[in-house]
Each structure stands twice: as C-alpha cells, then as structure tokens.
Length: 89
Picture 1 (cartoon, rainbow, N blue to C red):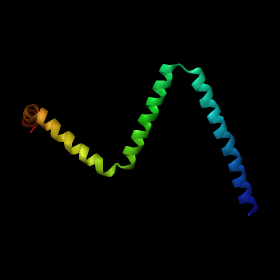
Picture 2 (tube, rainbow, N blue to C red; picture 1 turned 180 degrees about the vertical axis):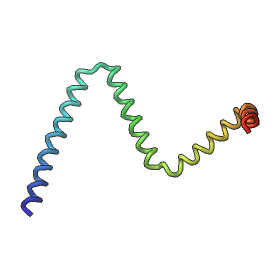
Picture 3 (cartoon, one colour; picture 1 turned 120 degrees about the vertical axis):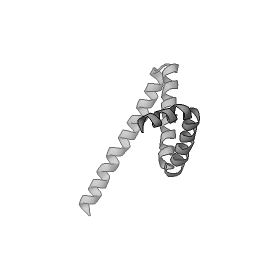
Picture 4 (cartoon, rainbow, N blue to C red; picture 1 turned 90 degrees about the vertical axis):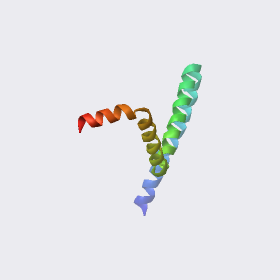
C-alpha cells in the first residue's frame, strides 16, 4: 500500500504544477502575440475540435459521404470514364 500511495502522490504533485505552468504560458503568449497570430491560433483550435468529432462519429457519416461523392463524380465525368474503361478493357 505504501508504494502505491507514494506513486499516486508523486503523480498528483507532477500534474498540478504543469497545469499552472501552461496557464501562465498561455497568458504571456496572449500578451506578446499580435492580433493576426491570435486569430490563426483560434482557427487551428476550432479545426482540431471538428476533426475529433468526426473521428468519434466515423462509422455512419463516412459511408454516406462516400456514396454522395461517387455519384457526383460519375455525373460530372461519365463520358470520360466510359471512354477510358472501354479503352482499358
């Protein structure tokens, strides 16, 4: 029990200062960075959130998206695709 409790205490200690350090860094960065840089940073954050949500609900929407994409491609390139297929086969 002593070893386990010691490990958990060590982890808790290591975690708390890193969080405070991150907060301090973000504050200093906000002060130092220009408006344009702040905008680009906020955009990258929003993009990351979107990609995560897509990964979570990946099973259903991916299949739907693929079907729609295939239909659009065939509609726009039917003539070319038909010629290519006939020449290959």
